[in-house]
Image 1 (cartoon, rainbow, N blue to C red):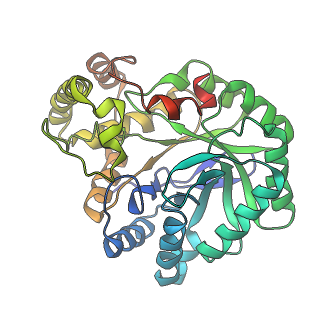
Image 2 (cartoon, rainbow, N blue to C red):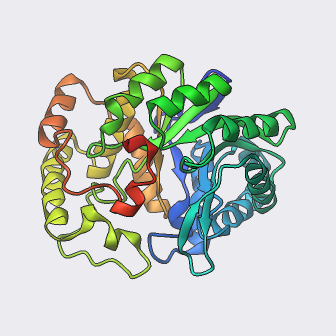
Amino acid sequence: MTTQTPRTLGTTGLQVAPLGLGCMGMSALYGDADRAESIATIHAALEAGVTLLDTGDFYGMGHNELLIGEALRSAPAARREQALTSVKFGALRGPDGSWIGYDGRPAAVKNFAAYSLQRLGVDHIDVYRIARLDPDVPIEETVGAISELIEQGHVRHVGLSEVGAETIRRAAATAPIADLQIEYSLITRGIEKSILPTTRELGIGITAYGVLSRGLISGHFGRDKQFAANDFRGFSPRFQGDNYQRNLDLVDALRKLAEQKGVSVAQLAIAWVLSQGPRHDTVIVPLVGARTRERLTESLGALDVVLDAADLALIEDAVPADAAAGERYATAQMAHLDSER
């Protein structure tokens, strides 16, 4: 397997492996998960050289951070020391699991951080970011509070999440930004218009989530796939009715190319995202949402996939930039995305 040569996010020296592990699905939103397998998957990722573990303090209302903390405590010391934590904060939840807003006030930022440090069992968070822009709090105030946490030794780097070019510029004028975490995949390419050029100009890295579009373009879903009641994909526009069938048509086209390359559909889709960093003269680190060791192994195999210009042309002909049917989130959730304005 290809050596995971570190990549540098931003200008503050944050070095990470070329693939990160998104841990959300181990606790929430994708249906039931296996705790023991989740911990084993985190251990396997660290053993394979993955360094960045991404979470949110609201994933399972703290469950995901506790899970990562348990995995880190039970990992060999050398692996534990290589782990870097990326934490999103600010999403407010009700006791029934409902989403009730975002809070980016400086006092709230520090409060959220205190709880995350405790749950993760670490003395610092490597990258800290508000999950969605709080429309009532200037981004300068939120980023300023993270900067204070950096000065105090509780955080190492400032990150952003799902914000647009104007907000990125304002944040970067307040403090150095290591990376922007945002959805980016073959069927979600909106960042190429103004966001990616802005991050490239400012020297800000990209940590791309949804590189398999929540499994939609993984090649593992059948036409009659049924989602559990606690799996939000069952309510997501791209997984609904005719949209789902049209999107699977794209997967079928991608499958033909994957078979010609001798790789899986998921590996081809992840390799495409990996190829976009050099193509756009920036650093892009895909976050793979593997919940099992089997899926992790498959995802890591993407590091061995080499795509030349001809391959990229064939892939993008099979899956054009605006080919996806349906929005990436439901209407209410899309309204919270500064990146979509």
